[in-house]
Length: 319
Image (tube, rainbow, N blue to C red):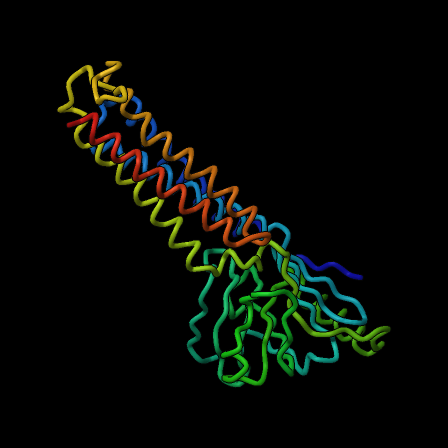
C-alpha cells in the first residue's frame, strides 16, 4: 500500500499561529487578573480564559487531523485518513478524476478553511456533494467522483446526512497529494491491475466521535444550566466584591447565629466549589452516559442543585 501525503507546512504554521495567539491572550488576561483588584472585569477575564480551553482543544484536534492527513492507495481502493475519520473508497467506484482548476463556478465550501488547510464540504453542479480533505484550495485539488453514495459505519455519523442522499446521486472527494502527477500515475496503474478483494465504500469514525452524548439535547441543557448558574455566581460575587466589608460572617450555626467570621476573599470559595462539583459531575455523567442515561441526568441535575444551594449560601452571607 502506497502512502501519499499532502504538504502540511503552511497549514500547520497557520494553525500554530492561531493557537499561540489564543495562549497569548490567555497570558495577558491571567497577568491582569492576578495583578488587579477583584471586580466585575475579573470575571470577564477569567471567563475569557475558560472559553479559550475548548477553543484550544478544537484547534489541537484539527492540527492533529492535519498532521495525520494522508491518502493510502492500493489495488483495492483509496483510504483517506483524517483525525478519527477514515473514508474508504473502492477504486472501482471512482468514475472519473477532475482537476479543481477546471471548475469555473463559484463554490462555497463550509468547514475548516484556513491557509494551507481545507476540510470542508459543499455542492458543485455536475459533481454532486463534495468532501475536501486537502491542504490546498479547491482549484488545486484532485476531485475523485464516485457513484453511488457510500454507506456510513458507526452510529450517529454526521459526515454524510440522509438529506444529502436525496439531493445528489454522487459524492466527490477532494484531495491534494504533494505530488499529484505521481499520485495519478499510481492510481491508474493500480486500477488497471484490478482489486484483490472487494471493498465497501463507507465512512468509518472512531467510537468517541459517534457517542450518543454529543446529540442528547437534554444532557446539553442540564450542563448549560449548571454552567450558567455557576458563571452567574462568579459574576455576581466579582461585581459586589469591592463594596464588601473586609470581614464577613462565613458560617452560621443551627439557630442562624454567626459561628465564624472570615476574610471576604473566602466568599470566592463558594463558586469555586460549585465549579469543582460541576466538572466532577459532568465528567462522571459523561462516563456513565452509555451505561445509564438516567444516572447521568441525575448527576447533571445534582450539579445544578449544588449551584442553587451555593447561591443561597452566598446571599445569606452578603445580606
